[in-house]
Length: 199
Length: 191
Image (cartoon, rainbow over all chains, first blue to last red; front, side):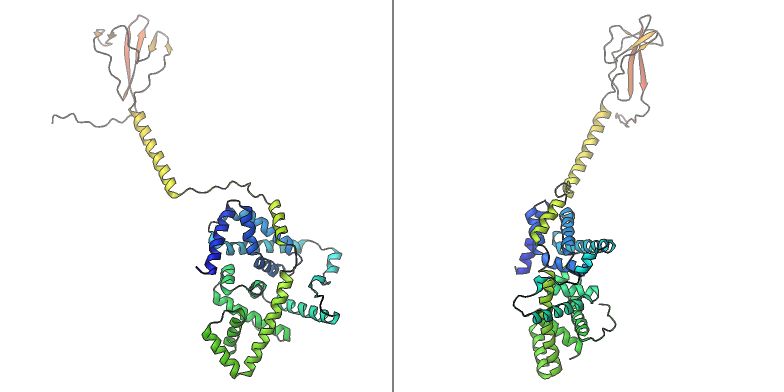
């Protein structure tokens, strides 16, 4: 049995235990899938500021609804669907909520955690600018391309793993990644992105 | 090699999904075409940068997973739901057939029992007694007032009966055929 089969077998066992109310099993399940879950939430929310609240909502939903999952082997796509709905719902609530002036003022300030202590000030500024530019280019992608791109780069997931999460064929993943990279390159070089293909 | 296929091969190489045959094709293309080589190097540099920035933005920010999970666990109503698991089809089938068989048996047994005698009631001018009680006086035939020496009839499935004693002390047997009963056909032989 290869590594993938072993992991999926473990995951099925954990899901069965979690359905029976085992807290540790559920914690391990979510912990094993946390990276791409964060990537999914980031893709929908568009920034890292509200991720904690949205992720907590996702965890609450998973804890409350895990017993409704009838097919343990379909845990990843089930979790992805639940997470998307929760993140979309959170995004809608956030858009209706009025923001305070402090929040708006702080929005432009970079988090000092991202700045490496080893670089000079100029280097840090250059790196920050590059960081923002690349993130801006990624956020400019259409949602279906952005989702694949983030799921790939957040954890270096394989095509098969991404296909399982998104429930689309592997070849579609390949094509979307190629087009996402091309669009980001064009954005960084200032070239226009032509008509977006359907895939 | 066309641009799109070249980008697919470069993407597969970057993602670690390239097959050996495809890798050979890519190497041939990079050796023979300078523009393809530049594109390849551009994508490699970009991928490394993008991975670093995406991971820093997504993974390195926010609260620790265990803190979020524990907060969520406290907030949820875990364990308060009563999980009903559907029993297997075999069990349900067995239960259903057992109930059906029991019901049929009860129906057969109950319909075979003699009807319970009516409770005693006081009727002006006489009284009704239970058919189950053996009368101490002879039964009088109502048609000719003769004493009927027949034995007390055995209970029959289709007839309710009871004894009625008038004010003069005469006792009568009253029979009442049940309307809803279906009598089975029977053959006594002799044909």
